[in-house]
Length: 438
Image (tube, rainbow, N blue to C red; front, top):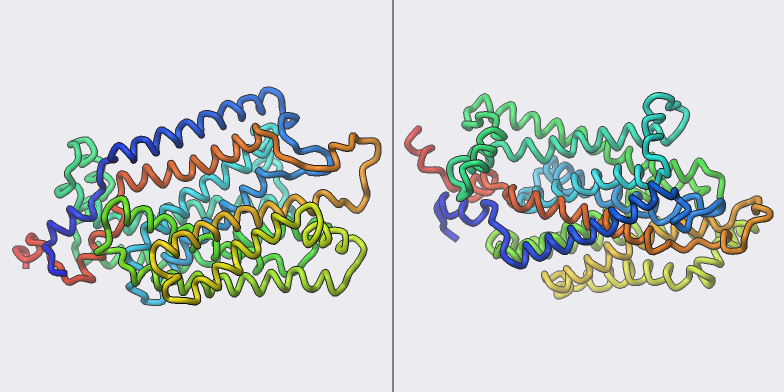
């Protein structure tokens, strides 16, 4: 495909929303407003409006938090690992992965605050936090990961902002913002050298931080001596699951954006094929950790573990457990082993199944364990022994998911979905100004 630089910019520059895009934004805002109303009630009345009690100290909020943390790992997978590996086919996907990572980690932090009955007590973590507590470690790695993720999203945008400040068909106000955000980028050799080294350093730095955030989140569970959580496997188990959820999210978003903005020439069927291969590999690795996670407790068969496993395999949570395992892992592997399964539409459907299964997998990691304490609480209502989220909990949870999608939507509206400068360089397209300068 032979195109000029101006045609490339026209194809990849941010586009205004169509009526469908505006309707999508209105829908997300409505979901967020309903959740905001529910959260105001939670602030007024306390956590009594939720289904959490003395047995279920954690509920759907923590499940949602672990899910957001998992999704955020995609930034290090696509942007850092593949970039450092010298893989160029992933260039059209890096910006999508970075946007998803930033949206997810922002909402992960907000979800923790939502889970607190008194959000003002968040300050106690900074004023009275103890380094012996994994909660402090979690706060540190989340804020660090957020900062690096934002920088890893922003730095590669500098050349694109420099292009958009003159080429974008936007209002003068927005073009002025592009000019400001470009930090006077002109593409000089010194700028390119600093730019390249900065991205390289961030790509190296984000990988251990990304692994740390998932490992520390796993430690929040592991340090609690309960059946289902008492496992040294939890760290790599969480990381493997996060790679699966993040890769699934990228596939789903890239399919929607390709369809919406007619990017078939840039996000090709081959990109879906390769992402499908990555996804099937990650699913196989995660399946291994799942087998390891449930096989050893079954083999040891202590009384507490046996009760917990029965609730998952044949009991109260069996339908949810097997749906998440079979529908979110086993069937996707089977489908993706065949080339036809890695076509855009089948892969999109599989990715949705993977992401939905990933969310419910976090739910069954959190909830069943809390239903089987070592020392049953005496003299409490029978309803306290079972956890079921209230409609207000669901409203708030859905609002956080909608807020993450809204962040992605807004960023997609004002940022080029596919890196313009990198794409032009890889296709050998040179700007007219560059020819004149040379």
